[in-house]
Amino acid sequence: MTTRALPNETVQLVDHVVAYQGHFRISRYQFRHGLYEGGQSHVIRREVFERGQAAAVLPYDPRRDEVVLIRQFRAGSYVAGRHPWTWEIVAGIIEDGESPEELVRREAVEEASLELREVIPIHDVILSPGACSEGCTIFLGHVDTANAGGVFGLESEGEDILVKVVSFAEVRTMLEHGEIDNAIAVIGLQWLALHRDEVRARWR
Image 1 (tube, rainbow, N blue to C red):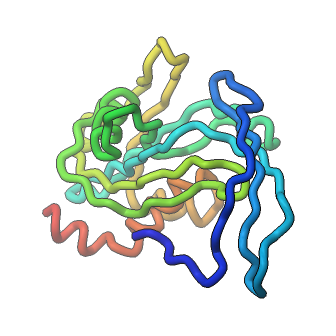
Image 2 (cartoon, one colour):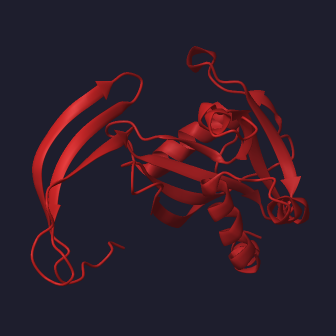
């Protein structure tokens, strides 16, 4: 569902240039936008981090009541002064011509050696709207965790991904103790906490 605009929520693009292009891109934008009390703002300049659109999936086995988490080194966490290995869910950047569901099915195999059965859409969010254009479509994925776990990832992309099966009770405790600080993972796990009974009834 698209956010509905309120009165005077209009934007005029004044200028746009690419300020940096490497593994990721940073663009410099200039805008004018409507003001709630009428009229237009002065020209504002903002740098925006652009890396495409993402999708993520929380793998869940309803019969065993277990989820699958992944863990890998994250440069952003390191620079922020946090522990640079974080508990996350399977995710990736959507490629041209690929749907969000196709992406999570592909990444589930690449990152965790998991085949998704059915998927349920959870949310479509923008991750850091003040500075980054990246959005993420989040799913819950039906999996069998009987043989899940290990170390996976694409060597060509420098991935070293630990895959761990965690009971729902244990992951709730991890959330309560702040052991999971990845926003997408928190959203997926909190959604499952709210909808777990209906999901287990649907996927029994």
